[in-house]
Amino acid sequence: MQLILNTFGSSLNRDGQTFVVTHKDGKQSIPVDAVESIQLGRGTQITSDAVMLAVEHEIEIIFADKGGMPVGRVWSPRFGSISTIRKGQLEFTFSHDALEWIKQIIQRKMENQQAMLLMLQTDDLTIAARRTKAIARIEDYRTKIASLKGEIVQDVAPNLRGWEGAASRIYFEALNDFIPERYQFAARSQHPALDVVNAMLNYGYGILYGKIEGALIKAGVDPYIGVLHRDDYNRPVLVYDVIEIYRVWVDYVVYGIIAQNIISDDCYSVRGDGSYWLENLGRRILIQSLNDYLEEVITVNKMQRSRISQIQLFCQDLAQEFKRHC
Image 1 (spheres, helix red, strand yellow):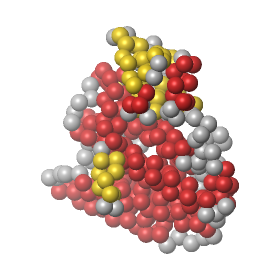
Image 2 (spheres, one colour):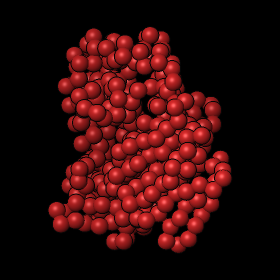
Image 3 (tube, helix red, strand yellow):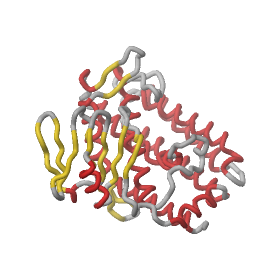
Image 4 (cartoon, helix red, strand yellow):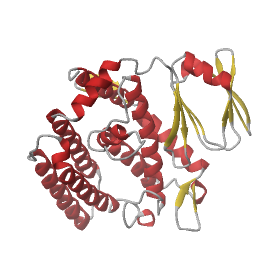
């Protein structure tokens, strides 16, 4: 399980081989073997004893901002100990293989977006027609990317970014048709979110960023050496590449929550500048729903794995690909 503290004043301590969470409603003891990672939000505390227990058991500790994005991390020194992987990663980044890899990543993202739209149900023929058109337009961009030629990523990076961005705008416009009218949004908004759906998407992506960054570190990969995303100073830009495959999982969970109409005014707040932020109740609903979804076991390539295991295996396979370039 992922142990998440995001209620102001909550603290995490240690009692032998057990984590002890203290909050306004009392205390809760959690065996160390039951914890895979720890995430702490603003206004929470952790003792050095609890940090040491986590390090001893190779449990990562993530410090996240109010939007769910990781801003700091503590991990075991045993993570990422194979330097040959990182050497190969640098060679890979400037190779033709990197171009083919990122093309496949973006194509998979678009395929996932198409599948998401196809899954949604409607009796409205106008909405169904708009969805069909959107899927066809996304397919056009997917075909363009498949046929794109170049030697290294930088040769075609503007095309990749432009086409990926255009396809995503088409996708969210179509997705918006299936959202209950009171929650529909004008456009995808990030920093800040301008509606509750985008606030939930942003927070969900933040959780996913943290999980992918942790999986890359454990696999020995440097998350700060990206392929397409290479221009952001001091950011784990490889996470921005890898997450493209898995964003649709957050989209699916958020859509399910919204469609069930379980979000109340207590789940979020609106600031003076018009920005939307999830409050404790909204965060709890989203975190539990997303974690349950990621832990769900599904069949992939005739093997049963949880979705979070798929991310970990992807990062391990990527590390092996980097080693071949060393």
